[in-house]
Image (tube, rainbow, N blue to C red; front, side):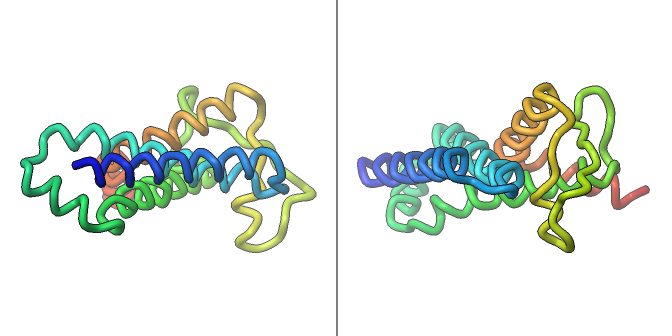
Length: 151
């Protein structure tokens, strides 16, 4: 059990360190990278919360594998990026969601997805909140994708 908590702590410290590095020396892709990292934190917190419902054998299995600890966090980051793309595309919009300003100096091609700037402080706060929620409640993002697919 101690091994599991140590590994979870190392994962959290690593993600937080990456966030601080990106903030300190990040370039124009800072926003998109932070979305991914904050989604990782949400995935970490969601995973950590779910540990209480696991049986002892399941916790022992988790303690023997780094992958089983890292995967939920990484998937949280990926789903946060999916939400980010849905926001940028306008598929999801409204008062509760971030708005982005057109950027004439944005990178070209696929990298332009990471180079977008939110309209204002409120939109950045909404973006980072939804990034965390996307990682934390991964089922919610999958439900959103299903509802978009059904339309």
